[in-house]
Image: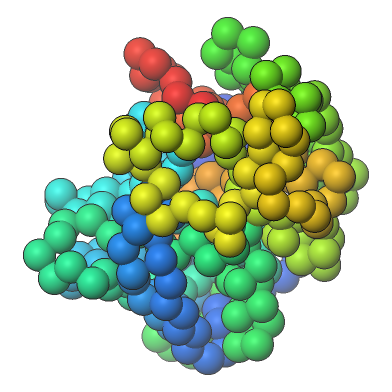
Amino acid sequence: MSVAAAFKSLKSSAVFSWKPTGKLQKTVANCIERTGQGLHSGDISTVRILPEAARAGRYFIFRSNVIRASLDNVVRDTPLCTALSKDGYIVRTVEHLLSALEACGVDNCRIEIGGSNDCDRSVEVPIFDGSAREWVEAINQSGLKVAVDLLGKSCQKLAPYLSEPVHVMNNDSFIAAIPYPKVCITYGIDYPQAPAIGCQWFSSSMFNESIYSSSIGPSRTFCIYEEVEHMRNLGLIKGGSAETAIVCSMNKGWMNPPLRYDNEPCRHKVLDLIGDFSLLAQEGSQGLLVAHIVAYKGGHSLHAEFVRRLVGNDAVSEELTA
């Protein structure tokens, strides 16, 4: 397909436009299979990532149902994770896997997922150590290849370039982006109730697979020790442990050191943002916005709301859950 034809097929908006990256769309060279426990459900699931044709994009297969990794399928207001749903079937906690696929350049793939409960209509992607490291290593082991269509032709990879400033806010949390010729991410968090975390920032003035693999992908999810019981009472983090997250006490500091980075919690927020922004991708394009993105005290709901604003869907949910 020509670049001009690809432009016409992709949905754009007034604030960003699709431009060629100078690269061809890619997919995994071999099948990837991993089994593990879900963070929130505690259930065991198996994920198989298979090669797919150019312009197929990324999509899940759950009980023979196709659930595309797109903004249209995002479940609103799911606490502490990103979930995708189609026709009553739900795949939860997709952000770490999608983050690794986006960052490592897996533009097209079929993701088959199945859980231990044959009757359940929802399934959760395994959490592993709470980071995206397992997925990055699996992708590197598989390797990538150029994706081709049914006629054996390759396809240009496009990326969304921001053309004017955009922002969303929820109280003192915000995400803003300004036009910039490359991907630049600056993220800040603030946990005054846990001084060991406190206020911290992470910024990367450039972004590629190497930087992601060394500086972002290995960063683990985190939680406040004193909030664990409350979250479990809400039916969350049933599969959580000291092996699946870094845990910080308000008074005693980190319960399972050492950290992989001094600002590991903040880096993990960048990991999540990349996974959530990947939902902007269409037909094997890049999802991560080419812009300088600045976020402060964000979360999955605010990430999704920002992407909705990008595509011109300004319907703001009544409550944004970080």
